[in-house]
Image (cartoon, rainbow, N blue to C red; front, top):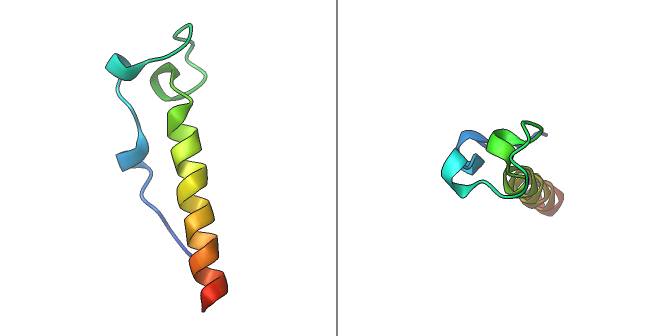
Length: 50
């Protein structure tokens, strides 16, 4: 079994930038990565329930 989530909806634009504005995260915002991890965790829980 596998699960998938669309990451494009989770990206934040440059106007929501936090921190020093480094290019390490999408537009300098680590929230996008946190949201991806949350979506992946939700997918894992749904797979376990099957």
